[in-house]
Length: 284
Figure (tube, rainbow, N blue to C red):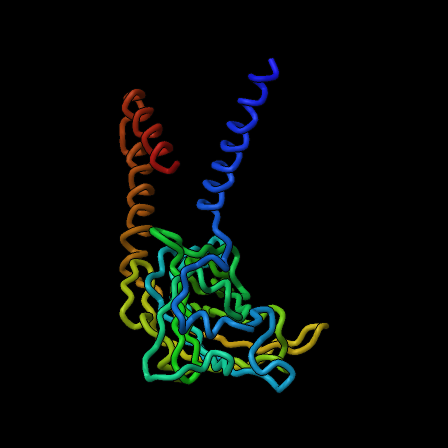
């Protein structure tokens, strides 16, 4: 009995060691990445919890947007769903390195760097694309400039004026703010003014067409302070032909069909019944 116990103990320790090694291989610590010498040198002493120029004034963050698609526009819910490329850039003097080349980093290294806490104010729900991997891009330039891009799909609220619907344009916005950093910490700006917006002028929509758009810079004032805010404004014009073919023509045909029963003889009860039932079915 004692011999069997002594034989099982080494085997148990070996299995425990193998399990720990395998579990460590599946979930490596972020410090175990095989970093290049340049990245390892930049990360030495870097604190991702502190913004650049900490206690030295606000940091300027430039932004630009790319609208890949607008998938749905709902007048009932007063919102639209869009796929957006959000691009941000800023200067971080802690990431200076020699040379004229830029470094494109793996998406997992984003957790090692400080990034802005930008969010879409009027978003009702959104998600970051992760097929086949998380759609995040980060690039560092030798002068300390950091370029950070995300691909997001969001359902965004739009306050529509439907008093003349559909014979009127609808003004929608996309608002970007900083969640935790106020104007004393960060300042937002559009990198190229109205040219910072790409993709809206080439969109093909069934119900609407984009008539015009422009960008603006403002600030949001809350009880906790004033926060930077960027706004994209764009006007949607209803395609009248779509609404005529999709809504008015079917409604007109249903009304005409419902009146056919009055032209049938009163003695033809089965025919009147069939047409009435068909009309109710089509209306549903």
